[in-house]
Image (cartoon, rainbow over all chains, first blue to last red; front, side):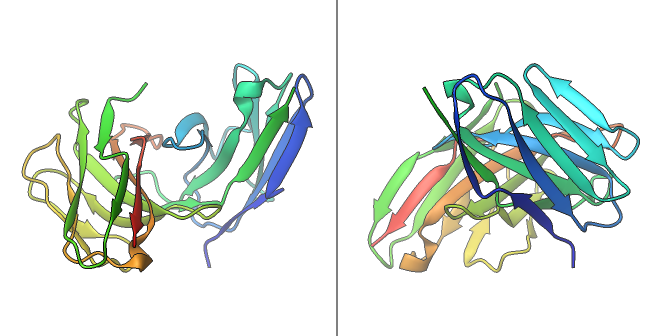
Length: 114
Length: 115
């Protein structure tokens, strides 16, 4: 069964600290993996996307890694800010064409305290 | 910032009412989607469209219907709302990508409460 599991479910950190969010998936065949940020009351916004051949991708203070062999990904946030408080969703696509299907994780709810 | 809009943002209605959730995008995208999302849960695809006059059911059994008469507009209709329909509804759109990196752009969502 194709699944995407994220951990932890929730996380509280102090402003300025770093954190790492995890995503494990069983989706096959694999096309790409995205991390989305979803602010409360808003739709998700894409942060990074990685294909099979990529093992790291950065977007400012966000760095995603991918190990396609172990089917694991992580999202590292450096020097956290209050605005980083959001839900971070891992999404895996099983195919690159327009017929591709997306599998969503339940998200990690990150809270950054001052 | 994606140019995709949803109205209303919040809606409280009584059981049995007919409602239509609006979704519009100004990016000229062919593909559009409706997702349902409950708090702390993953997004579930309920409808999608490849373009004008194309509508398909998603993975989640839904009592809603959609239409795609114009490229930019993809409304979702509930003929008779029930408390079980209480949820957040997210609309998204995407354009066919030349590589396997098609991006979906999401609207802000409609939070629906059925009493």
